[in-house]
Amino acid sequence: MQNTRKNEKILVINCGSSSLKYEVYAMPQRKSLGKGLVERIGSENGHIIQKNSVGKLEKTASIPDHSTAMRFVTEALTDDTYGLIHNMNEISGVGHRVVHGGEEYSSSVIIDNAVIKAIKNNSELAPLHNPPNLDGIRATMEFLPEVKQIAVFDTAFHQTLQPAAYLYGIPRELYRKYKIRRYGFHGTSHRYVAAKAMTMLKRSPENTNVISCHLGNGASVTAIENGKSIDTSMGFTPLEGLMMGTRSGDIDPSIIFYLLDRGYSTAELNTMLNKKSGLLGLSEISNDLRDVEKAALNGNINAKETLDVYAYKIRKYIGAYAANLVKVDALIFTGGIGENSVTMRHKICEYLENIGIVMDYDKNREIGSNPGIVSKNYSRTAICVIPTNEELQIAVDTYQLIYGVNFVDRRKTVEVIL
Ligand code: ADP
Image 1 (cartoon, rainbow, N blue to C red):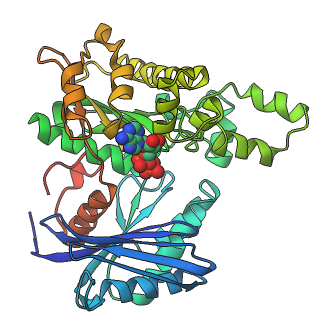
Image 2: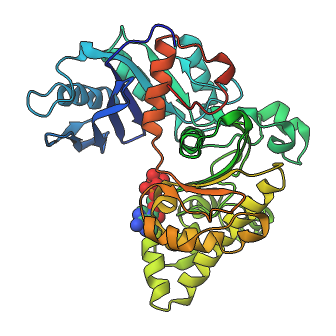
Image 3: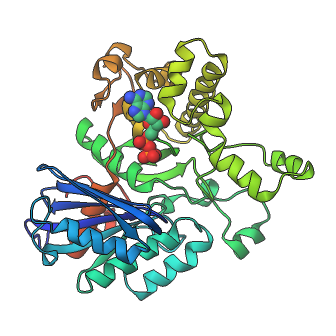
């Protein structure tokens, strides 16, 4: 490793339209010094909360815009009692989560004018995410003008997909004209847990194939061959693929025309498929898996069916990806559901013995919400439960880019050791 510096403080920022999440890491130790969340940006009663090992700091105030939010963040970060650092000068790099890097970015990059322009151009592809991501970048630049800022794209890890996996079977002109293709998301999480699996299984990415299931409110499955993403279930937008908390996932596109003909507007359908479908829409109970699981235990038929659909779709993707990998060394569960729901993990794996993925149901129950390996010793595929940590991956990328660690050949693959 070149130019390695000790005890550098990296600020990680994940900026949404009305919220800003942040965390400070000491690198290369990978130690979190604490984190915070600004909510209700754009309102009179904005709110900031920050926690570290000493305690928590909380404040309600008018936070009209991201620049004001960032001012509150700098005050909280350097607070005399609950601060995470003494002085903003200590921050040596800032890593930003950016949702869409389009076809331009297959790895994290240092932000310059060209990158800002590209993020802006890709706003058409991610209108709800890229603009607030840019607001966060601009606000940070205002307070830390001398500090290098890095963009870590949700889409970047999936830029290794081949045309067979990313092209839709629609007129090619739509790809040429509008860049309509599959991009995939959650890349930072899939990359992180795949790297963690290598450590857990003492394997190297170059000869390891992984299927990783990120099951949170949003959910996606990714096939990783020798450290590179070869397919992923989200597509042009995060709506494709698995059934999620409130998103439908894959449906027959004709349903949309059918409903348009019956008087639904495009806005209504957009809301229906993104916000009112999935676990929530099908169970008519909740988007939270815990509520649906509880209702199913109490005999609610809709809830039971919803759990069946949820697990079935995940199995379908695992099967499809297994068919496109010569071998599967590890199946990973991560995200709120993957990390915590013993019963959903069990349900998903029940039919996978057929393809050499054999869960040890006792181990699965015993580890509960802890990380670990939950497959039988003789299973061809190891089943791993691994908590994701996108913020840490962003801090690692930021540190590596700023201090010039040479990992050119490995940038598109999972990064195991710092
Ligand atoms: P996000 O995608 O918003 O980051 P999370 O990764 O936190 O979401 O996942 C949220 C989901 O995780 C919810 O559906 C929630 O029900 C589920 N979840 C969290 N804890 C548990 C648990 N102990 N058992 C079952 N599901 C859980």
